[in-house]
Amino acid sequence: MRTRSYLRPGAVKPRRLPGPVARAQVRPLVRQEGLPKLPVPPLKQTCENYLAALEPIVSGEELGHTRKLVEEFLRGGVGDRLQKGLERRARKTDNWLSEWWMQSAYLDCRMPVAVYTSPGVVLPRMRFQDRQGQMRFAAKLIAGVLEFKKLIDSDTLPTEYLSKKPLCMDQYNQILSSCRIPGTKRDTVLNQPFGKTPPTHITVVHNFQFFVLDVYNSDGTPLTVDQIYMQLEKIWNTSLQTNKEPVGILTSQHRNTWGKAYNNLVKDKTNKESVRAIQKSIFTVCLDAPMPRVSDELYKSRVAAQMLHGGGARWNSGNRWFDKTLQFIVGEDGTCGLVYEHAPSEGPPIVFLIDYVVKYIMVHDLDVNVLMFPDYGKNVPKQHNLSPDAFIQMAFQLAYFRMYGICCATYESASLRMFKYGRTDVLRVTTKESLKFVQAMQDPTKQNTERLALLQKAAQRHKENAYNAIHGQAIDRHLLGLRLQAIEDLTSMPEIFMDTSFAVAHHYNILTSQVGSKTDCVMSFGPMVPDGYGVCYNPMDEHINIAITAFNSCEETNAAKYANTVNDALLDMRALLEDTAPAER
Ligand code: COA
Ligand code: HC5
Image (cartoon, helix red, strand yellow):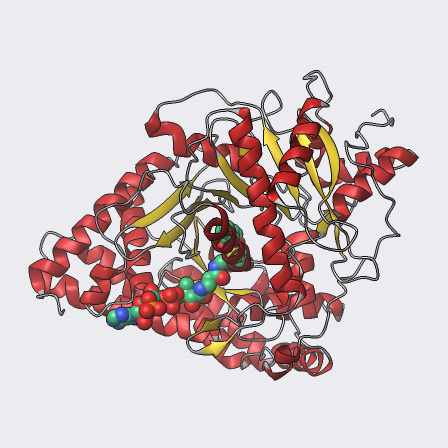
């Protein structure tokens, strides 16, 4: 690859920034101190729950084999030794999992970040239809994010709660002024929001050309919307050429490929400075070229794709720096949303920022949204004393069972933010109880009263599992910890981590995450396995937004078909409730 100055220094004078700081420099937040530490669950409990989790998804023979391996693991002393190692690590660190998690879930992962790990968010379509509207909207959006940044910087964000317990707020310190940096073997994250000279610029990209835009006046006050608008106009007018190389597309490559190209790219001094400017910028705004027009029906899907990957090299994929933690995307036709690099933060802080910014700028601009499941929302399950999350998850289970006649390992993100630096664990959705429920729904000999009783049991079990997961008692991260501990101790890998069951248990054909927001937005991410679905859902009171993804290259999966089947499952499940029990109001 050629190393020359790919990146334009920008309309506004680019400023040199001091050298990189590899580790996040986080201010201690006083309220963080009171947070408990993530526990290491008891070994026997995880082993028992692991076997229970396998029951609905592997054969009796495989289960018998794994049961023996688990017994050996427990009796032979290997399990105890690893557990002690983990407990030692837990005593010595703030969070035994967080560094390992960041490394193994994100930074070691060699697949491209675009689609594979970076979620996209589609915001309601704006009414503007031209360039001025696009610029004005982008200017307001930038001002809104800077307002939000004030709350982060002054540590005045209201503490969030889950089940009445305060949550770790550290992720808010990771989402601005941060960026992933590719490596040929593993990546790192640069984060310097509170260094000696905190960044005061954002980056704007238009027609594949990147610009540095200083967003603070010399007295430290943020630029006004009008000032930002004028700067965006300048940027637009200096980047009219459309024949530029889409250098940003490099960031959508396989990480090893990009890591090598990056090392070459930054050998050139100007490139290095330009890349650093992007990495350190507070966030990036992508002013996108128009995309092919599609019918209203297909609009949401097209925009979801635009947010996830930019539409390919011919369209806007080169108008990105996919390593950047936060990129807001604004198209000329009213399209807006964002894509975020997942390593530094979970979705909820991003969504909280979106809610804030949307409230700040959009109140009157809101366009009518296409609702994906319009018939009901959290209200119906609540009226029938069922957990909405459990209810919706059972619909995903039922739909999958209807399409494939079997159950599969199903992942639901569960927050670990009750614990200091906590990220997520897995709430395993498929249980013996969920299997019985979906089987009964498909069995014509079953009465509705029996089906309802099974749904209630399955939902109850899900709710208990959710409680355990958010209180640090799920199995996935513990098993991961034990496995990493074995690697660190250089002991041979215990067999429980190498049998078929373990692979089946981690082949998540359904990958789900509930990300609730006040704004009526649709969020999405890609599947985890080639033959899987990615399901991001946002249950509102009266409707549910559900974005389903799958790979076209897989013949067995079909996102539209699964979405329809989920739609029908939700309708059938409401009919079941109404047929059997009067709603409590
Ligand atoms: N009857 C009536 N109402 C019920 C009920 C029942 N049996 N069970 C629950 N509810 C109510 C709850 O009180 C709650 O009320 P609210 O709307 O007033 O808050 C509401 O229904 C929703 O509860 P529920 O659907 O059970 O789930 P939840 O909102 O607690 O979410 C998780 C469960 C697992 C999604 C949540 O704990 C979590 O971890 N969220 C974060 C996930 C995450 O981090 N995702 C992004 C990763 S990047
Ligand atoms: C803006 C919505 C982003 C949702 C992101 C999310 O749910 O990420 C999951 C985090 C985790 O550790 O479970 C990962 N997942 C996308 C693979 C479900």
